[in-house]
Image 1: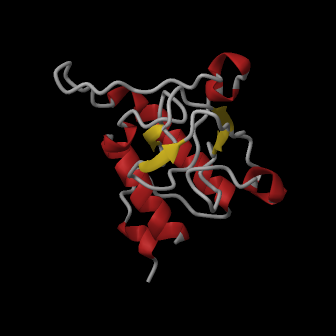
Image 2: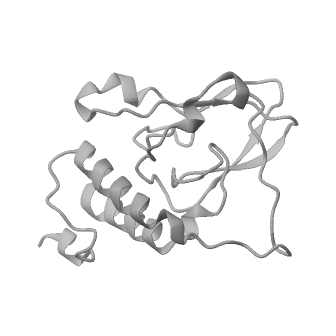
Length: 159
C-alpha cells in the first residue's frame, strides 16, 4: 500500500529523493506562508532575539527547510555559548546543526545553519518546523495548517 496516497492531493507528488521532498514542502509552505495565524496582543509572547544577528546573514536566507517536527524544542541555552541552529531540517541532532548539509552533497541542501547566541541563560523554545520568521526561535509558525500537513507528509513519505 502506498501511504503517500493518504496525503491530500495538493501536497502529493512522486518522491525521488530527500531534496525533492524538501522542494515540495518548501514550495507549498511558501505559497501559504501569508495565512499564518496572528496571536492577539493579550496572548502575545515576546520572541527572543539572536544577539549575533548583525554579525551574520544566515537568518536572511529566503528559503525554509524541511519541517523536522511540528512542535518546538525547549532547550536551556547559556548566554556565554554560541550555537548553530539547523535550518535545513535534515540533520539528526535537531534542533542544532550536525553538518548534514555538508556531509551529504547528494541531498543538494542549499540552506546553511544559523549561528546564534542569547542574552541570558534560560530555557528557550527553538523552532523545529523550520518555518519561523525569527530564526532560530519559535514564533508559532508550526500552528499553520499547511505546515501541519507538511509535517504529516514528511513522516508518511520518508519515515
